[in-house]
Length: 352
Image (cartoon, rainbow, N blue to C red; front, side):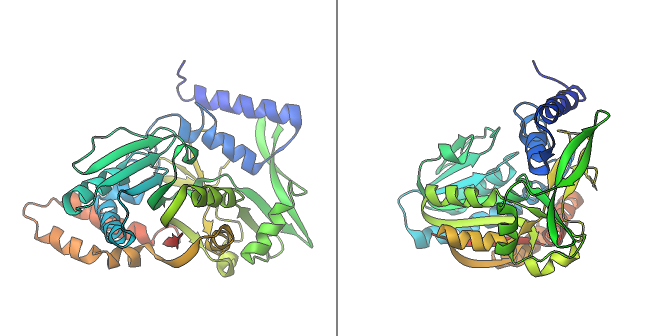
């Protein structure tokens, strides 16, 4: 049986409440995991459009197809250097398929080498494969056989469940979710795992008294799975984030809820109906990548990365295109603005 909103929210709230009543307060990471990924009920599991103008937010691929096309141009050049019989791109978190669609269309138009493109998502969309391209789908990275080529993600680690920690005097405490009169509330208690303080050390973060930061313990196992499945090739992950020396800019942390193209800090409301995201800590992610065995090639801004691939030239061609619409020009400009938004999107490039 398919539930409608607000039935989904009520059912998900009931399930989380039962867990708290049975076992006591849950870490915010546990709450966030269920709010986003509870089978059939979580935000990303309900099969409703979330990345669209009718949804809750737009990512770069939905804004303009130039994003995926330019990434395809860069991948085509890298494929020539890698020189494998079949170049494979595995995109995790493919969502609506907007990135995959523009990527494979551009590849089919410009590349001589065959391409296998695998979309990894809870509900990977179906789409026709253009000439020279094979399209596959998987529900998880564990279903993907070892491959040579490119692992690609756009705004993925920011949606991993995070723990929230604060400094209180000399102590580190963690934020938990509890119940009071039937409503979710936040409480503070001792950290649920020693890994939380270890992560702060890995990131080189020293919190000021009263400050809060999100700890993403899912990045390390995710990086290990990438290393295991990528036999040889490159990793490109695109996301918004910060370096550890800039953490003081976020004394209340970076966690945000996204609902109908607005942001808020009511994390415990509209459970399963709003997105929850936290900035990536690039310092921690890069150190974890090194420990995993991946080599850091570079980290640059999204605008710089796209510019190298021909961003400005694409815009000039668009301006010279007969009968180009005002809406398309606005979409292209919006993509440029998005590259600088959310604190500045970054592109991390790794090799194996």
